[in-house]
Image (cartoon, rainbow, N blue to C red; front, side, top):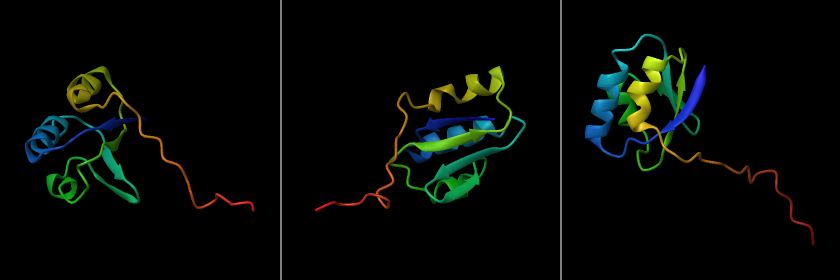
Length: 90
């Protein structure tokens, strides 16, 4: 299993992405915060915030899979900071 970040900024990009990965075997999930959905579902993807990269988990990490999704992969990784556990000392 492998995870990468993908950018799908337009409806056309979403259509192309779904078309490409639908040809592949295995499970693909997109993660946006607490939401996890099937990356082969165009309707599901369109409910997400497409202004930021989405985490894509790939069940079968093959060379063919990586070649197909490479055009959507972001170069930068997103780092999130958990601010709920930060304490202020006076």
